[in-house]
Length: 257
Image (cartoon, rainbow, N blue to C red):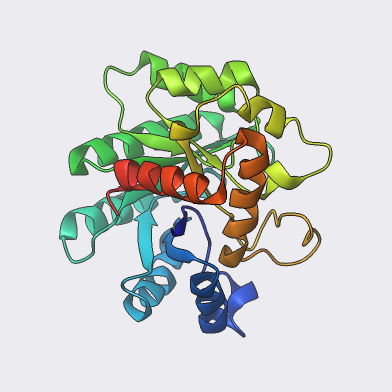
């Protein structure tokens, strides 16, 4: 059985000294595929360079992260993303990561909403899913999606919300991305997941961020997807092979890889 890391920022400078070795470690730990989210126009080429180097293991998304939605530049950034999507030169497996982040800057909420909806439409145009970033904004995103006439498939990346929020997300036909937070001592996420179906869960790391126990305080990497899967064994009371099989099937259904 093999695992898939559905959200890993492999282009980040924290990996500059050992990127190829880090990817090799992931492969050796059964993480056979890794999906890279984009954040803005500056990360597109570094991301595509890694995909070219590891074409059978690494798959790109493209999108404008909400923290990079700025009044002076967001329209130009969205135009660049749309041009890449429609150039047919590269095959992107999703539009992402997109969404709303109110932790750092609440003043851009209106244009974050606008950028999110525009990028949802990009995904519908290309018939690919979305990867949603939500920070202090899950209820806002759920409300936006409920009001839309049509939504793409997708995943709420790094889900850490309540059972009620999860059920609303599942009603929308979306998946939940579960990463290292599920291993943390004081998280409620394990209890939440016990009330949710495994067939709507995908694994992720968000590397180099949010490392699982016992690596908290250190750099996260895609090999640690295995630790997330092992934690889900205890949550769902299932063997590792079943966790790997079901979550990988979920990724195939969502991303087509």
